[in-house]
Image (cartoon, rainbow, N blue to C red):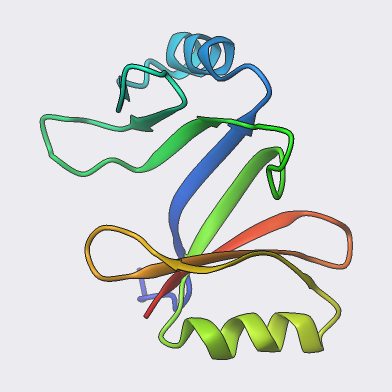
Length: 121
């Protein structure tokens, strides 16, 4: 299979009831789910034996930039990709901010209102 640029790198589910969503998707797909803190607001999803989570499930608060699933795509230049999304009719929802590992992430909605994430430098 050829290397496809800008493939999905992460998924995030923002739910008004994160514990319910974690139980549902963990039960449906057998996903290992690891809550990060005592508040239960965010959990990593993935095989902790491999040390590489593949996504997360978090609590959507009243100021959440989106609810539902967002898929994050890896890009070389996050700022340029976010600007290009806006030029093509998208709207910024979550401004770029740092994440562990040296990358940054941002979220926009496409012209249909779907939340799409970008992950890069």
